[in-house]
Length: 118
Image 1 (tube, rainbow, N blue to C red):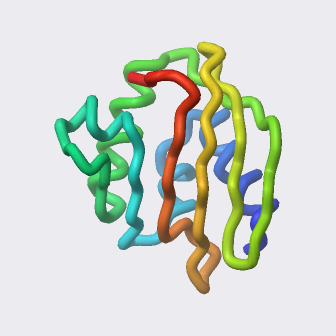
Image 2: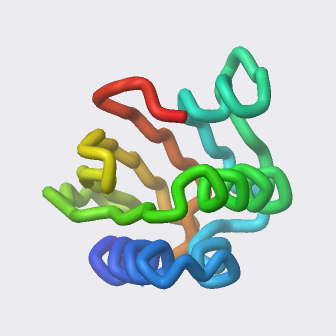
Image 3: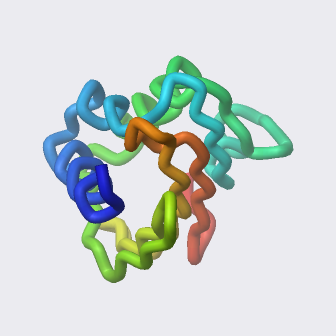
C-alpha cells in the first residue's frame, strides 16, 4: 500500500468512527508515541507498544471526542512512509509521521500537536 492509499484508508476509518478499520491500518507490533499518551495513561515517554495498547488509546479518544473529525491539510511523502498534517474538529492541528512496514501497515508513528490535546 502506498502512502496516499494508507492515509486515505486511515482518514476514512476515523470519519466512519470504525475502530476495527482504524486498527487495520497498524502493524501488530506498532510503536506509537504522542503527547496524549502522557496525559491519558501517565507514561512519561508518551509511547504505546502493540495494537492492544493502541486500541485502548483510540477507544478512549473516540469516547472523549464524540464529534471527532479530521480534515487533511497536507500529505508529505517519503520512501517508506509519510507525514499527514490535519486539523481536528476543535481547531487543533496535528502532524502524524508514519513509517510503513513491508505489508503497508503503520509500524512506527509519531504524533505532534499544535496545542495540548486531551
